[in-house]
Image (cartoon, rainbow, N blue to C red; front, side, top):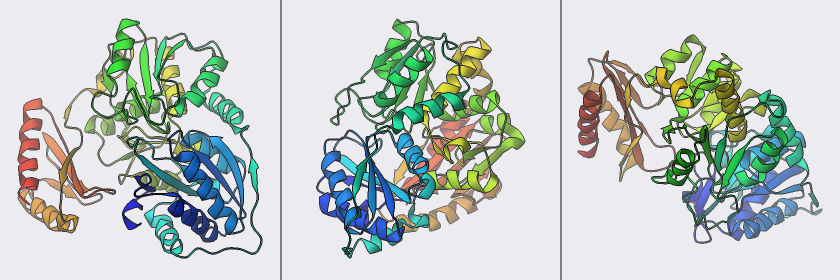
Length: 439
């Protein structure tokens, strides 16, 4: 069971690694850990989710806690539901953007605050070793009417009035949960859009549930260009990640989208340690750096009372969402910004295309414990640069910089390089990959 407990959730191949027995044990453990009276349960559209959800509910009620079952939902809707119902916590049955053979559990405490390894997930893991039955079992009630409340919440917080957005959109939900939210949301706002892959299908027959996967955005890009749309958006399997394509069919990095959301309303904004220097310069003193990872970004936002946050992975966090993600809200705010500026998206991001960014490069480590030694060697090798160890190792020079850090979830070292020229970026990336591979 230990290999399925990740930094921010529980995830594994279903039913080989995660199954109904584990689901029942985790449900039971979460209820006991939270000392919960009521827990919200939701699920995504994966093939094994109904079976796994039933086991989770069985575990929760066995511990004596009641369940509010909200049915199929996006993960952001699930977070909203936990807060809205004033529940003591929640369990979302989802493997997010993982391939179809995976499933998993995302756990929150009261308010929809996610439970990670540093916030109680290890304690849940320990408690799951012993199944405890309460004398009085909990009961289950259905509450599937929260979707309408969530849609009204999104509209109110976006500041968009019906009929204001005139831009033509292409929306790809990738056979995931985004198709539960987009039709009622966009119809209410009278947004013109073409749907792609809106049928919920846990086999994900048309593209990867991860929009960052190679080729996953090909259909969206093609449709945007052919239909002369103003922009295209895509969601991952549980619709907590957003990917964006401009009117030319070019993918726009999530960090650039965060910069535009900040530009629309300059507020304290948290970004992770991999962000481009262009974005950091653009946001300036409003920016607050966080370690990489969902719980780190959300925690930094809470600590600093920041209104906005983002990761390079396409998660966008909002104070109004109780410091959790909402890809749909990010999409609405972006559309509004593009509409108000009366410029193509490609023009709006031009000021951010100043440097050459490698993207994240992963190097497999058979023994991740060696990462401390590797980082020590790199510190010595690049000792003439400005260094910090806030999140792994970051070294800055006038013409380029890099960050290398151990993955939170896999036996990998993750590298990002950025430089003033493409040639220098490629040279330094190759140099660092060789250094990492030598270990």
